[in-house]
Image (cartoon, rainbow, N blue to C red; front, side, top):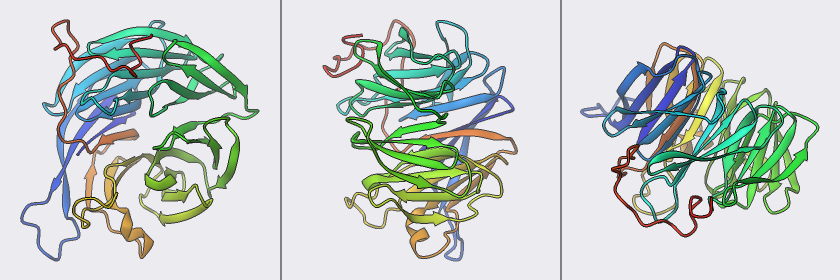
Amino acid sequence: MSLIAGSYEKFIWGYKLKPLKNSSSSSTLALTLTQLFSYPSHLAPITTVAVAGTAGASGSSDDTIHLYDLSSSASLGALHLQDSSSVTSLAFYTPPNLSVPRNLFAASADGFVSIFDADPFVLLKSVKAHKKGVNDLAIHPSGKLALSVGRDECLAMVNLVRGRRSFYHKLGKEASLIKFDFSGDKFFMVTEEKIGVHQAEDAKLLCELEGNKRILCAAPGENGVLLTGGEDRSITAWDTNSGKVAYCIGDAHSARVKGVVVLSKNDGGGDSDDPYLVASASSDGVIRVWDVRMAVKEKPIPLAEAKTNSRLTCLAGSSIKSFKRPHTGNNAPQEKKNKDGVTEDS
């Protein structure tokens, strides 16, 4: 299980989550975060990170995207957007029948959504989605469409197969985050401390959830659960089916929570003792890993913790263990194209 975090200080941090060897029975830590790398990969603060298996990417206000192979702690080079602009959001798409990401998507401060082929990494097309900067981007599980929210107080839909904007709607207020649930049947839109739960088919508002303070990060979990963190320094799990709070880790950090990642699924398969793992990062530089099942009964103790001594801005991770190294050159191995992939009709 791998994690990467970006910081204001332009550093990218990479960690591997491993079992803690020779831990005593009295120890509260069952896992350890082992640092893989740390170096200044950008010329300006890092604004967003994304991970798919061992493939990692970071975006910055220096107008570049940097790529990483987490298995070898190696930098794979940089990508540039068609029009130089700050990168605001990144997302990989990996089809179910492939072991490597098929596409990388990037949103920018000039309102564009850029579509990259990931084998090799080349820019396919840039789509003007918003009149102002894009705040966040979400890719549907099918890989055929994306939703984005921007500073123009609008919601946009991009047809990733045809490479064009297909829907544009004025919200009347600026949304900062947008996420699909795992099924793709619903999406969640965050505005300040409120979360709108929408039906994906027609964007109908199903319910609205309200937190205590501004929400800064969100990640979908299993069975309609949405995990959020923010200025209240807590991690809250919302049951979007019932519209209630499922559980909450109060004061999970001593500063604002800037990133939350679901690392594993509790799907009932395999060893029932496998923890349901969630990682979180705060603006004071601390990364923690939790078994959130304990939060239902009592406040859990972190299973692992790492201190970066930097101001963290974002966090991404993956629980996939076996993952092929992505290629950026022309000598990439040839794989059969997925019929449902984005690149075929782009």
